[in-house]
Length: 199
Image 1: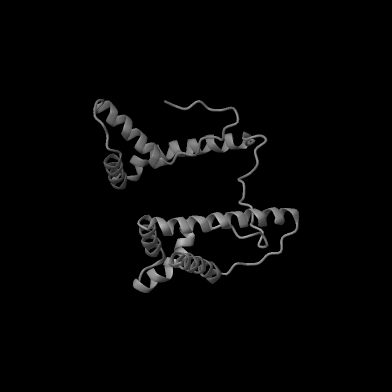
Image 2: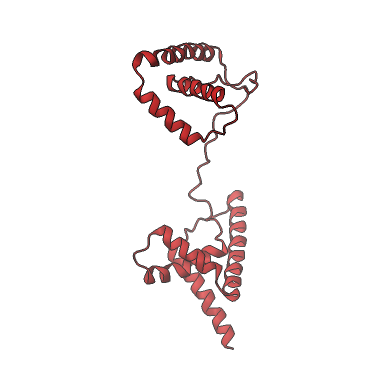
């Protein structure tokens, strides 16, 4: 069933000679086998095989239909104004390099400590495989380590909120966090909590 055309909708695209051929094959097949369910991939493959062996004069009527449709499309495009009051595709806003670094999730705090261990055990793993392994480890991590990571994530979220407030107010001095700083903070937190456990 054809869709209702909106007043300012873009004209339907041009139909190729091959698409007209497939459409004809479908109609033919429906007439011969009205109750049969068609497997699209199988049907499509058969159409392609048929199209390949067809002689050029057999294909000509489909080329004529395609030319006629191209004329229709071109004339409709001449009259097409485009949607009103719509902006073009929105571009992603560039991030200010001086803006505060986003807060890390509990999982990322966990990864910052575990990644070097995984790399040491599996030096041949790629980035994707390491990420999968870290995901598996995170899903089986003890409640104690998980809660520590979640606590660090909360602290980092507060830090980010404060820095963003200062940034928006124009009072923020950027300090770029380095990768090893994240890892060091995690290790220090872990050591502090282990010291607390010993007491």
